[in-house]
Image (cartoon, rainbow, N blue to C red; front, side, top):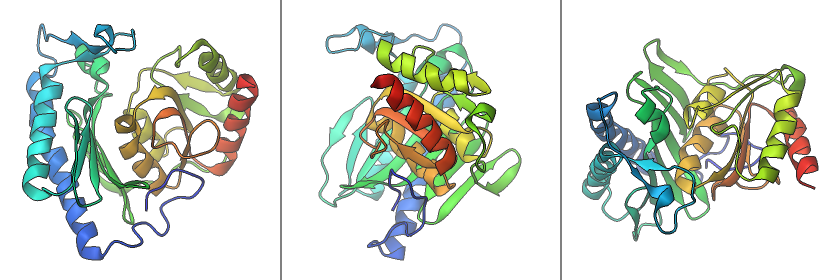
Length: 286
């Protein structure tokens, strides 16, 4: 199965029969297909309104927008699951949790990167994954505007897009001083977490910001070496975990443990760069 930790996608799906795996892959693609038109309908439209979840009671204070496109996309995704896999559970960013009876849960983020969506940048994506009680099994990172779809799990690791369909493979080992690091926010969580991130960033060759889920897609495609974030939710990371690990990478929390619960996440192209970055993060937090 697709698991957070130091192994890649070898032995994925043990305990699930091939018919079930094939059905889950089919439904994951169908769910992503359903979200595409809903996200594109309002993308780069003038005057798109957004509510601020961060300012609402229980919000985190930081600007956290949600648009009609987020809600319409999740509704379309849920409709597919209700039709195709009615006994499965659902965890979605906008519409919460629906309890299932199959032992499987679909984890959905209809637009991961709504801030980028509002700005018109193509670095947001639709996240679809399916998980059991121990973590994510198969995941999709879909970028509707570019027409790219990254998949990982059940022995698959590929991207389909403008350049055709190609296997995914993360970068080979290199020194941290040669590494490219991606993240979403320059401040990266709390003040202490930000200091820890900067310790890695300052040791690396290049750092870029504002990528949201597309950062993990680029890591899986062999373009960059590290993605480091904090303050994430499960729906932010389940699909990226599957895609990165299927491509040969590693995803853990900042202690080297499972990351599918969210929080502090480090995704790395290989064990060497993971160990080097993790050591700096932990030393800075000590």
